[in-house]
Length: 310
Image (cartoon, rainbow, N blue to C red; front, side):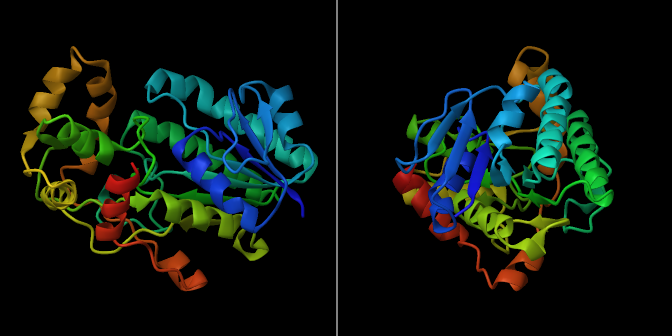
């Protein structure tokens, strides 16, 4: 079996992807600053993706590379580091003839399409972080169009799932974490707007499926996400039932977040993303579901497993 490499193996998606890749290969290389074995037989490759030589060596000999790295949620870090990481990865994949799967989000998409996001939704980011994601997409799309490499952009909605306690799931941070500490669940802007979330084991399985299907390349794919998303209030009710606690809740409206942003660095980073909560946020993965006969995990089952295994 040919080697496959996960660039950014320490995050929620990288770890889930490592769990499913043994179905496709017994040669898995995990790359991060401090990689840890997931299945027990992976090759560990410590290194910094900002170093071109590290990325070139990490990709060498790999048939498929998955870029799943998660940088700190800070605009200045994104603006400085994301383009450098992407250029290093593109260069290395071109040099070694390695196919690339980029695990992306929806930040680059036009705000007018947030209520129904598909692979055809236009790139027109409404935020500074979205501008960084759009830059990455364009870098990759340009290389694909020139025939310089085979690649996939695999997009996910905000994600949730088991084993995510490192601050990367906004759903976990706003609701489960608070309720476990005896506090009310938090939500932004409105309890009444629908919000899709992608279940991380589904996202990982789908990313591996795409990476191992030659026909999937040079396309954008939305990773499988359950239909009929819940409203913020319904999410809190569902999770409270699973935890057997009262569904206490607290809403942070826009004006309050903007005030908090003056004093709180995290709120400052989140404030430009509030458009995801003041309207319905609906992620359509029909293309993938039809192509691979894949049924996404229901929100009820995903919530149960997140509470049980989280």
